[in-house]
Image (tube, rainbow over all chains, first blue to last red; front, side):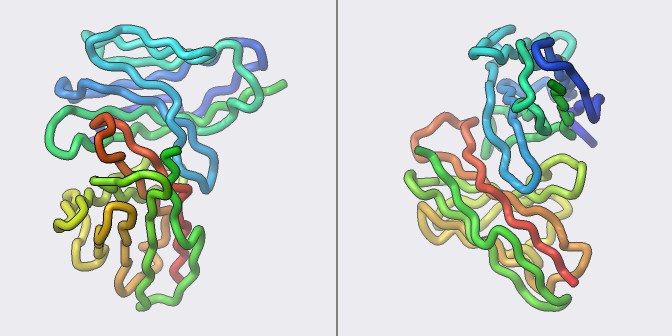
Length: 113
Length: 117
């Protein structure tokens, strides 16, 4: 049972345009959401996060939007740069037990010059 | 700060042998460490959670006798894949939660590529 889903395995965007990566979840107990960037053969790098009490969080070129009623979040990157090309994972956690992270399946973003 | 290292970065072994992977938090104390595995083009799947000085908690479907986890200190956790078989070939990643850090803050190591022949 995949509790966190990223339905788009890949996304191609031109440099300077907006990249929108989507993520859906099923567990209503999740109260914190994170986005990670990952290059092949490397560990994930934290990008941005959002608490369930907010609907938007912005950090430079990265903005995460959360729609709790739809159990949906998205990551906007604007303007996109070739260096943004990587696999992006969304992750979710709930404040119980070990507060472990549940990862989505990832979206490969390719930003072309 | 908040650097996590893994050793080795890659390992090739023969079927039936055991392989130990180390995960270290270099500049902070980690009360909790997590072990994940990732198959090609798939998500990171949590294998187990380890707290310093106590037994690891394994996720459903993960064989604890096959994947031995030891968290002997606040800066070191080890994962030993015992009697490795080709199906154990994967990318293993650890993460660490900093003592006193936010509950949802994990710092990831660079991963270890295991290939079992």
